[in-house]
Image (cartoon, rainbow, N blue to C red; front, side):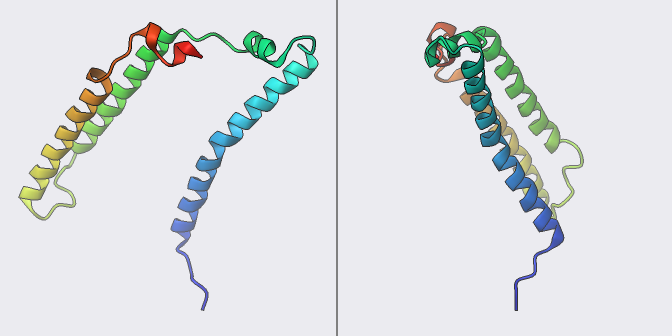
Length: 130
């Protein structure tokens, strides 16, 4: 007999496939748009010169601080996910407190990895070299 899938699982698979395909599709559309702009507007220039004219310069220091702020928001959401109603789903009190402690150890570890390890100055950042 054929395998019958749960409709919820099928919906989750469809969403994941859509999300997995959205990023490569958007990159392809951006690249195609850049090529179209080169062919229509900057046809007298080489592709490299046209790309430099079309690309928006990035303020690396601003971008780095925005990513740090985004990481702080994610870490705060992880901490808040532990706080409300933490005893739901735990039969054992030891498992509850162990998971809370492990969650905060993971938060501190992620904070150390993101902000305190192998930090590059703005001039040495990989985004600045592109």
